[in-house]
Amino acid sequence: MSRIKRVHCGDVNCHLVQGEQGAILVDTGRAGYGEKLLPLCRQWDVRLIVLTHGHLDHVQNAAFLSQQLEVPIAMHRADLELLEDNDRQPMQAHRRLGRLIQSLSRRGFQDTLLPPFQPDLYLEDGDDLSHFGVNAQVVALPGHTAGSIGLKTEDGALLVGDAMFRLFSPAPALVYADRRQMEDSVAKIWALHPTALYFGHGRPAQGL
Image (cartoon, rainbow, N blue to C red; front, side):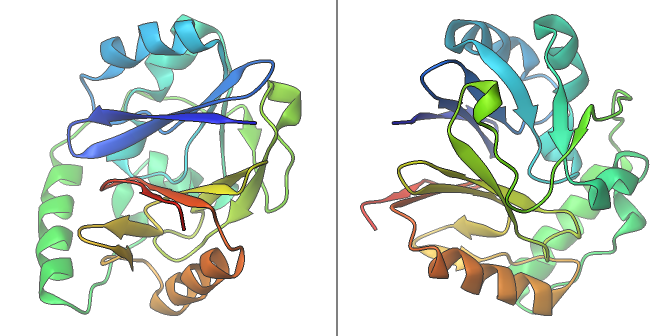
């Protein structure tokens, strides 16, 4: 059975997922939160850092934490280009709130530097992460970005990154690189019948 801890890193959620023989850190938040995450990662015995996608607000502490913890970084290869330039996958929005988020995000991406790193592992749909101490599988969730992924734990909880978010109730991403893929990924999430949803932004939805 897995234990999940949500860690507030400004407006971004990072998550610690603990299994029987170790833990995985899902996303690393904006710059400045590495020192908050580091002692928690040590306490939970983190053995892998998984990035749900390549946007700056989710990856800025990856290099620091990987070096300090001496653990690998894993993500989907399709988002590798975002580590060089977050504008490589232009974002779209079809609602007013989405367009506002899109504008603010673009401004933040342009003004922010990313400590350079290269992922150690590239993840694909269905990959088993049990050799890192957690009984969890990778779920491909493209749409928000081309390489967006989530993790499904053995007890059915699903960490979805920015494929969905929660303001009042779980909802599809308001900004995305590909709307059709995003909608397909949301349908895939519900088809998996998750017992709980954990988002990159917003409170988790439990007891589903």
